[in-house]
Image (cartoon, rainbow, N blue to C red; front, side, top):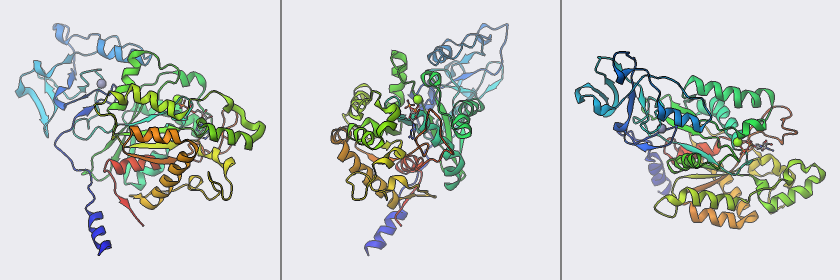
Amino acid sequence: MFTFLKQLFDRKEPEMERLPFYDIVCPYCFAKYAPDQVVFRATHHREDDEDYALQEDEMLNQYRDKFGLEAIEELEAVIEPDSVPEEYHLIVDDVLVGLTDRYGKVTKRRLCPHCHNELPITAGKAPSNIISIVGASQVGKSVYMTSLIHTLQHSTASRFDAACMPLNAEISRRFREQYEAPLFERGQLLDSTQKEKRQEPYIFQFIFKDPSKAPLSLVFFDVAGEGMVDRDYLDLYAAHIKNSSGILFLVDPLQIRTIRDKIRIHMGDEEGEFTARYDEPREVLITLFENFIGYQQQSKTDIPTAIVLTKSDMLHSLKEEDSDYIRPNSNVFRNVVHRQVLDLVEFENINGEVRRFIEKVDRPFKDALEVYFTNTAYFAVSALGSNPVEQKVSGLVTPIRVDEPFIWLMHQLQYIKGREQ
Ligand SMILES: Nc1nc2c(ncn2[C@@H]2O[C@H](COP(=O)(O)OP(=O)(O)O)[C@@H](O)[C@H]2O)c(=O)[nH]1
Ligand SMILES: [Mg+2]
Ligand SMILES: [Zn+2]
């Protein structure tokens, strides 16, 4: 009887239902607004009409300046929908998608009213689900983002009957040249100049082949580490976190003092880089919370948050039979492949093991997490598969469990189902 009821229940597990329209979260500046708030870029210009002359777009240039991108001198005019009679508004499925201007020219180039970047065609028609990656400097954010996107594109997407695509050619080129090719073709980690450079958000879309399923927008904002001082940039980052639908909170095991001390004993002189100063995970969490999440009305956030232990390959030197910490047969060392659904058995195994591990090695951090987040799950990943030596990976990059936190978030956001086997 119980199994029967459970099957019935399982089958009814909700899947993403499509609404006529959705609030837009701009993937560039992360402002949130209704779809009728957009503005448009004219598709032509005229010398005899000041309104339609080529002109500087100050708002767009201000945005570009935040990322050290050069200003664009002249662009076609921005048209406010209010300046065009309603009968010339083009509305498809309740969403304003175009205007016919006073010269009879149609524009479908929708811009964000807050930064004037061109919006993705799905904006307003599908949920703008932004997933953000946060964590202290050096925790492994850039490397994880690279390994995750590469894995999503090359294997995860096809296992979920989807494709993972960059929003446009420019993002595609930038990701390939600056992140993917160096790491996956040359085994080379980012050089430090690149680490400090501010990067415009990387926008990808996870598109299901079944057209009745809404696409998922993925925005990775690779935060420049030490450069995070200027107010504008911090505000942008705050909006990014606040308006995201899922959070990947990265924790470096070497940030945790107990672990650091143990690994140091095991590795002796080979400790290499990690005598450097580290922020404790709890401090990172408190900073994050005070600055961003604290602005929300309630004191807790229910944004689903994956607590992701990075560099799990480093834990090999800790493993011992009967250890209270990590055993040789630990789930963290074994790659797991999820197909079509979130495998709930594998998920509970890793979630339980890492949760207990964190509780053991850093109780204050675990307690702090529980104070701030109501919906968490624990994961362990290795973006590289091995510890790099002098900024180079020896042999192939072999990611371990990198897509699992993302798959859990898809499940939380009701894009996919879970299955107990
Ligand atoms: N052993 C190991 N080291 C890693 C891994 N991912 C990143 N690292 C190391 O962590 C350093 C910082 O990574 P990075 O992604 O630049 O950190 P960010 O400052 O958070 O963006 C890298 O230079 C690597 O040395 C991993 O999967 N395994
Ligand atoms: Mg980085
Ligand atoms: Zn914007």
